[in-house]
Amino acid sequence: MDTLVRKLKMIVEDSTLRRRVLFVLVALVLFRLLANIPIPAAAGQNLGSLLANDQALGFLNLLTGGGLSAVSIVMLGVGPYITASIIMQLLTMMSPKIKQMQSEEGEIGRRKMTQYSRLLTIPLALMQGYGLLAYLGQQGILVGLTPFEIFTNTIIVAAGSILLMWIGELISEFGIGNGVSLIIFAGIVSSLPATIGQLLFTFDVSQVPMYIAAIVATVLLIGAVVFMTEAERPVPITYAKQVRGGHTAGGTTTYLPLRLNQAGVIPIIFALSILVFPTVVANALASMGSGPIQTVALFIQKVLANGWINGALYFALVFVFTFFYTAVTFDPEAISNNLQKNGAFIPGIRPGASTAQYLSKILTRITLVGAVFLGLIAVLPLVMQNLTKIASLSIGGTALLIIVSVVLDLVKKIDAQITMREY
Image 1 (cartoon, rainbow, N blue to C red):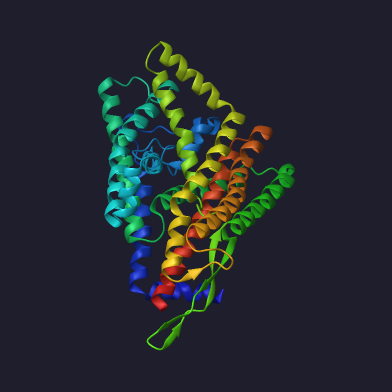
Image 2: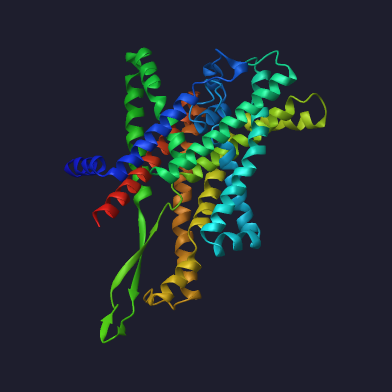
């Protein structure tokens, strides 16, 4: 408790930290204001009942930070930007030219990749915006829209998503933490008071055992997520002794921490984005009259509406994206080269290619454990929802995962800023 008070005091007293925290708070307040401004075609509409019965839309509402439930101008959230980032990272692994641009050009290469992701976000936002509006028209939410009204509302929805992308990037640059994750986190947290109020209003004494079981399961889930997020595999590192100018340096032993879950909450967010994307596209195609395209779109809608198929796809995507994001963010060959340049080595392992292979082998094993755990935790509420027919369970489990992971990441970023100030 004393440590927490000391850190809070340091944040308040340090002008730079204080500005960063205040910037994040102002940006999130702006996001919540935008999330409550409805598009012109849906003034006064609310999707509460539709979201309760549609799992795909529930996931999309989670990804948009609650912007979909109010049919707001940011109803797409940062989904198109996340999808664009995934596509660009896949191209990085598939195209040697793009990979070379990103790795060899340093900061300039990363800026180019970011710019390409922004440009790709525009057509994705337009496509997803139209698909979502078409689906809401099918469900009787938006009826009687003229082609011009559909066009203007699609432009507004796409522009809202791009605006939210810009706010997220500003948070990452001038605030603390990952802007996209914090926007999703803010949307989830903002819905908690209403959820708690609804639980209190519908409180039933006969359901007390179920409430207790849910609280216990939540505490255990939080503990498991924290434990797996903090778990790491230390790899011993020894620095060779070097004599420079009559002084001996090196000879020390330290370790390289390899986290069990290097990717954090990113696989969950990526999986949700990809899981929702085909649903939105199928909805758009299904509204384009009759023909083979509509038949295929209706088939995709039917397949994705199956809870068990949806759960299996969710697990597979979380599993794959855990490995994918770990491979993007951690390069064993680069680590091996850096160790060799600094006169460091792993005891019993030859420097160079052997060290890279050793690190890759360890990383594959621990990532396998982390990927399976993350996938199981993600789909467990889905399984419970299919067994108990309580739709909110599937959304609540994923929301809990995102909240815990984002809070842990944010605390680490704040600790790093405080440590840097102390030194």
